[in-house]
Image (cartoon, rainbow, N blue to C red; front, side):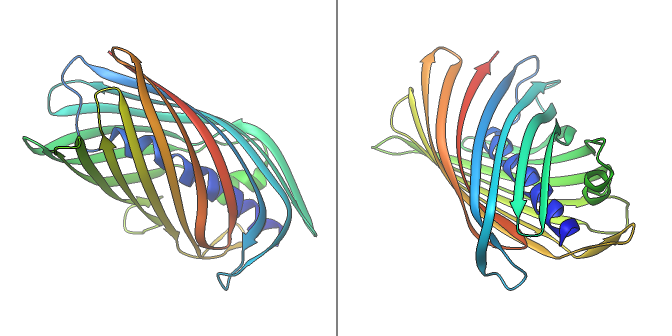
Length: 268
């Protein structure tokens, strides 16, 4: 149970990083241009999904995280991507407890524009995920080490009488070594922009990882579905502020958490 509880926390932190990536989306940056997004999260949970997908009581879970996301256009068809964060976790259950402060995984990637026309973009991203390598050996074991990720992205936008609408869909696969598959992740963003200053977004993230055995630890199969709603406002040219809330709707061997977040976007 102790090893499984640690794993739940790690996957939770992994999944929350999707919200920044989904916002950036399938549209590559132009050469020499880019954006920086900093986001702060606060979350808690009083329940946890067990192996039978049932939410059962949990003594307590809290998390704070600060995350930085960067996109920079190397050329009009190639964008550099960086993503990392610092987090504090506190977990309490009847037979286990866990606390730590440390860096989350760090992503370094390149996003290739495959197709682009008015209102439509298709891209492919290849990333190397650097394991956080925290001093706690149990955390390091259950994170599985450095990983490779391949992500497909498609986005489409359209003007309507009420404003601009868009969607962004992503599907990613991660592996520690070629020839195997450690996890699959999906993300869908629906957006509505009634004016150039305001943006509403509904986002969903589905994560799945297969069961595994790492250095004697049995790591259970995991499933997680998170949904968030957020509002962003442009307060000066190239500057935005975003506020939102999230909820784990469904899962297996994962914390059922609720979150609030605030983000600052800077375009250059």
